[in-house]
Amino acid sequence: MAAERLTIVFADVSESTAIYESLGDAHALALVKRLFDTLTAKVVAGGGTIVKTLGDGMVCRFEDPERAFETSCEIQEAALAAEASDGPRLALKVGLNWGPVVLERGDVFGDTVNVCARLAGLAGPHQVLTTQETIDALPSRLRSRTRKLHAIKVRGRLEAVKVWEVLWRSDPDVTEALTRSGLMHAAKAKRNSILKLTYRGGTVVVEQSSAGVKLGRDKANDVVVSSSKASRVHARIFGRGGHFVILDLSSNGTYVAIDGAEEEIVLLREETVLGERGAIGLGGAASKPGDHVLRYRLEELKP
Image 1 (cartoon, helix red, strand yellow):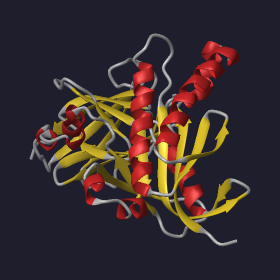
Image 2: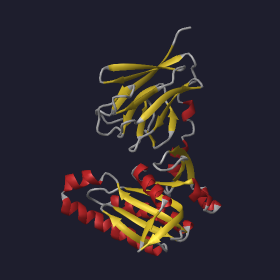
Image 3: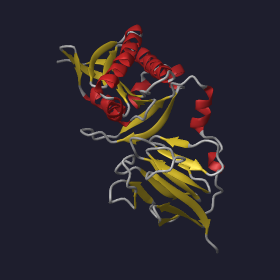
Image 4: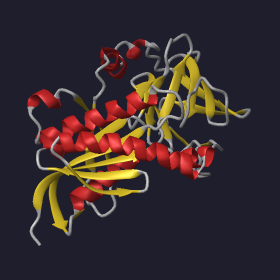
């Protein structure tokens, strides 16, 4: 069966299992249905077609990648607006991918669909992830509303998928937060320094010349973080140019609270320079105490 080029959109409710457990099946299902009714109207208005719903997820297809892009932004805006009302909050994770798709009996199949599902699974709450192929199919005015993240491996693919994030929020402060200008100066470059990570009374030392350390729930990590919020391999810390850098490898994100800074940094498949001292949260806010939080500090070695 011949394939045609379409844009696929996957939208999933973040942490839906916890929502059902806390609210009960009937209440949670009613909330999800109400949200999906709103999203369906947005998709149809954008020229898209609802392919199917899968529990707390929705699969859509669009002929035009530009309209798929704009609709993905609109459904996130709609979900955020719904969150602003009283009651439980439902956050969306969205995958967006353009490429060859096989249509059969109203359903969609193929590598483009599989990659899109993977993107939705990797996305954090309120996030839209897409691919290099999709970016290339968009006009320049929409490309300017994206930023490049890291490549990921997808099962069944030999080459890594180049992932991009869609900057869908209209709030101008978001762009400033994402560029993190000035964070490179949060800690002066000190080539003769070490970083000490403390978790549950234990301390691990990271040297500039070392290969770095991995953090996560799996016991094979250098720092084992025994928290349900942490991914098996959640993040990596390593030295670079006199700084210490943390790279997020997780599904739920890594939170960095530099002492003295007003806001936390949220990393989703991204990296940032660590300040002189602060806290790191794996899968949750670093400012909130819990078994997911580590402390760190830089120390300059004497010559």
